[in-house]
Amino acid sequence: MKEHIETVRAFYNQGAAGEWARLEKHPFEFLLTTWMMDRYIRPGDTVLDIGGGPGRYSIYFAEKGCAVTLAELSEGNAAFAREKAAEAGVTLTAHAVNCLELETLELGQFDHVFLMGPLYHLLEEEDRVRAVEIALRHLKPGGQLYASFILLFANIIYYLQNAGALLEERDNPADAAAKAALASGRDWGGPAFTSAYFYHQRNILPFMERFGLEKLHFFGQEGILAPNCRDILSRSPEEIGHWVELAKKYLETPELLAYAEHAMYIGRKPR
Image 1 (cartoon, rainbow, N blue to C red):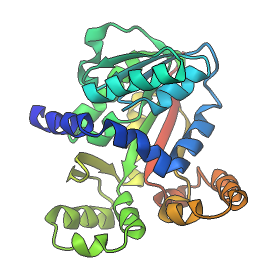
Image 2 (cartoon, rainbow, N blue to C red):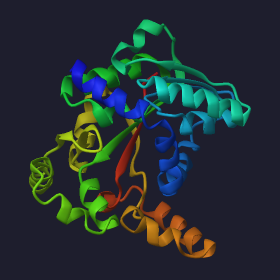
Image 3 (cartoon, rainbow, N blue to C red):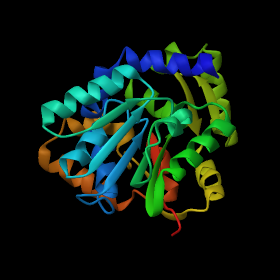
Image 4 (cartoon, one colour):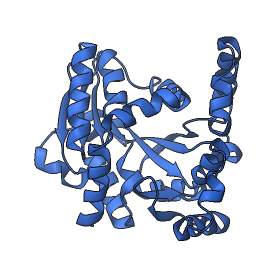
């Protein structure tokens, strides 16, 4: 596992600015996800953002008056987040730490815990289970956990968005294995943009049910907009606004989850 984690760490250390810019190129994920999270997170709340990359969500909630701690695998991402927080004029505590070693920091408990990166990259189920368990130990009773997953159909959405990519990957064994997993309803982990784990949407709720949370929401973070994201963004602001409002209506429709590249589970810890 150590070699795999180092591969992921190196990938993000080299691309902190690119990861920050990703949500500018694909803004619907951030817009719709924060729209859902804003239902629960209030000024003055404490937030632990585990694996939050260069701090997009951390800084957003710090600007709303939350006390935010970022715990991020990549030293480059953590440093970038500190810089962006300073530019925004907000306070952000950022640690560079493996999510599976988080308890060494003795951070205590928080009103809200984000787990919006680790489950993308932990290839072994026992590590994903452990990551959720550690996150829950840092969550106050009655608090909310926000866990994100990369959906396996995101592989197909990438091809829909990028002309020629499907032909370029037609002889790639990893790509063939991912397509076979999708067809059979299985998850798949392996080499992608870096080492990554992709969930078939039907397997996420069964995975989360073992943790004793009250399910509040399960939704596609881009809604129905991911396959046509670039085309929609080229349209008038008025039409874009109408598409966003339409996407909000269908965020939690199970049959439409495959239109999104990422899914989020929001659950409440029992008191």
